[in-house]
Length: 476
Ligand SMILES: [Zn+2]
Image (cartoon, rainbow, N blue to C red; front, side):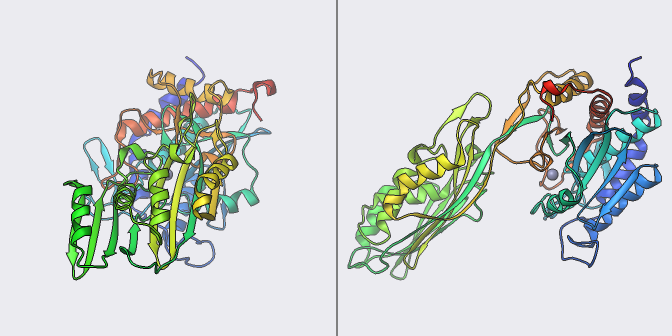
């Protein structure tokens, strides 16, 4: 029997208990709300969820600490260095339309339903029971294991800001808050707000009253709308629009009073996966530019329609890709035109072969001539650990030994908590081929997947806490 076998055997025995714990944790509706005073900066329910897991840890004999309700941790074993596991206990709002009540932890067949079942309470229970199994099996460690619970992952990561002011970063670790086998590359991201002014009352021609579209920079906009005021009866403009739109089913044209309303429907998707959506703003800009009007807002519109025709960034001179991280994506997420101002929001996810400064410089070069200025900017560099790094190899081995699956590690455009951990990667819980249920209605986790995740996390912790990596292997 390998050293891990007694741990694995114990995990299997915990199934009933794990289901119960997960149901109890789901029953705490830990959506962010107003502070309930000291120790509850994100509202009373999130504080209760944190107290719940820390009380469990105490009862099981782990060292625990609550960091003023921002975060908490429990620890096992001894060692100079720490292996960190970073989880979160807050959930996104349940929303409507559930078949199963979102905060009851209903067990139906092999599925446990509820908000947080897979994001991130199921993984939390899997890790807690993996830790219990290590302890009960009497595993001696060369590194200390520290399981950290953040309370604000879904909104602002305030929890991690606070926690890492008070506690050191673990030497290495993982984040059970995304996909298996693991994510070793998260593209860099930069969000830009741009603005250009125009003369709001040019002489004659077609007047553009306003344009609106999109709700957030990180969502492919599913609708956009323009309101036009033709100078004459509007018949000419109406006919031209009919021609340009040529029965496009996504476009609705409507005459109201002397105005023309132009609505475009798209398809929403996450900005990191723009190929899954259909950008309504880009289509709207193309239609408006095709009217061929001059002056006022029409110049910046023509420029945007020329430079932003898709999500690759090629018109802006930033399209690129590499073998590891894939292609750059650029989402024109929001637009507002009116009262002499054009404002837009771009959400760009870039591969390892590019950097934020170059992107900003190229966009300034492409749009600056049209009067566009950058009025807001927020960037995060890529997060990347090579596939050959000891941490990635060890985690992959744990996954492969438990599942028999040899899928390669993943690169994504989204961002995970791994950025907050530093020397760590996102590792599960979603298995390849499973639907993405995080943030969806009727979120669930399969009991078999919960148990498999506990086995994988147990094995990973066993390897990381009992083995020592050589410094020259590149571990910090
Ligand atoms: Zn999550």
